[in-house]
Length: 380
Ligand SMILES: Nc1ncnc2c1ncn2[C@@H]1O[C@H](COP(=O)(O)OP(=O)(O)O)[C@@H](O)[C@H]1O
Ligand SMILES: [Mg+2]
Figure 1 (tube, rainbow, N blue to C red):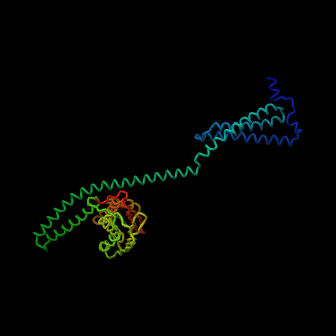
Figure 2: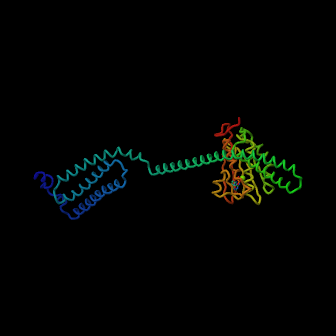
């Protein structure tokens, strides 16, 4: 024990201060520098421990422990350097250095394998990118779900409406037939005759409405095939002008090399009529309605644009829903845009509406130029 103590601490050699000839400046310089380095070294494991405690998910703890030991050992050698200025503990100093050497070599070797692992951890920018991607995916899914709900609603409405409209139409035929028979029996010019004439007009209007309902419910036969749209659009010019009244100025700008598209003639005419009537309603004081058609990649785009009242966000969100209308009872059925929507769905096309209050409304119809448009129900 005594021998060990002598070898470690009381070596009998002169202390290190003796080598410095006890010059106060030199001694102070060594003491202060070693003390500062030692304290700095000792503070590092504290910071590491704090980090590891706060970030529980940090792996490779054993390397961190080894690194902490290495730093502590380094700090300790500096404090021993201060000690040996006065105490000739060269054995202790040597052992501390040997321990530091072992730990530092182990750390230096073991730190290499973890570098690739750390590099493989996603960087902050990468995490942000992945997060943005997730958000985008979630939004896309929500959008798809919303569309599915919308088309399920359309489907259910379609079945309900089709059933009602069909029965209703049969009843209307009986009503109209009986009114006509009664009109023949009543002398013309009498109040009763006028009442009957009004009743007949109303039942005609009801008949037109049921026809629209049936079209919406897809109970009327469609003839979807590849065909030229320019003649169909040109052919509606008079009808549209008549229907929208003289306050509305309709311009047609149809490219003359339009590709044939998958469509049904009657439904397309009906859709154009619905869109132009909506534009007219949005322009109570009159104005311009522009209709244009041009080729896109695999589609033909038909645009109907007005500079009318436009729609706010809430209206726009519901505009294509069946029976949604902002118009007074008697002037809106809420079936116009839903017909257009349902029709495009049937021919594998799509519709886009851009609208805001004050700037007007632009409705774009995209009709497929491919024989096998997705979801299209072809004739035959
Ligand atoms: N061009 C347009 N400008 C402004 N609002 C429109 C336009 N087209 C449609 N809308 C809005 O969408 C609603 C639904 O239109 P629609 O389905 O055609 O039914 P309806 O015309 O019978 O009201 C309208 O009541 C109106 O509020
Ligand atoms: Mg309408």
